[in-house]
Image 1 (tube, rainbow, N blue to C red):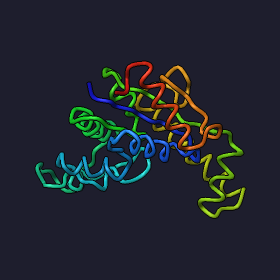
Image 2: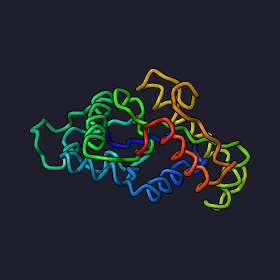
Image 3: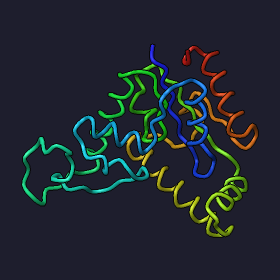
Image 4: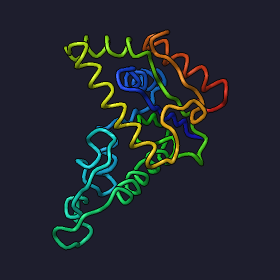
Length: 201
C-alpha cells in the first residue's frame, strides 16, 4: 500500500509548509505546483500548464503538449474539462508510482477510490492575515484581500470539478487548525492520525 496524503488548505494557513514538513519526517516526496509540473512533463505535457494556482483557464492545444505528440490545427483550444482530465491522469500516475504527498489540485477527489489520507489545513482569519503580513510584507488590508481572493479561487475550482464543498469537514478524513500546534506540531498530529487509521505506514 502506498502512503498517499492529499492536503487541501485555506490560503495563509501554512498547509503547503505542513505538507513539506510531513514529507521530510516520512521521507516522502511532496508534490506541490513545481513537482506536479515536472510530473506532467514526464507524462508528455507542458509543465507550464500546471505551474500556477488552481484555477480554471483556457489553453491552446498547440501549447498543451511538451513533445508535440499530437498534431492539431493552430488556434484550437482545450476546455476546462479536458484540462482537468489531463491533470487527473498526472496525479493518478504520481499515486501509482509510490508514496506521495499531494498539495491541492483536487487530489482527494481524483484519488477517491484509493486508500488515501485526505486532510484540510485551516486557521482563523486573523492568524492567516498576520502570517501573510509577516511573510509577504503586506498591509493588513492587502493581506486580507489576497487571502479572500485566493480562497475564492480555490473554492470555485474545487467545487466546479468535484461537485463538492471545498473545506467542508465531511469531505476529508481530518480538518486541522494549524494555528494551534504550529507547522511541525500539525505535521506530527497528521502523521499520528494517519498511522492510527491505517493510512500512513
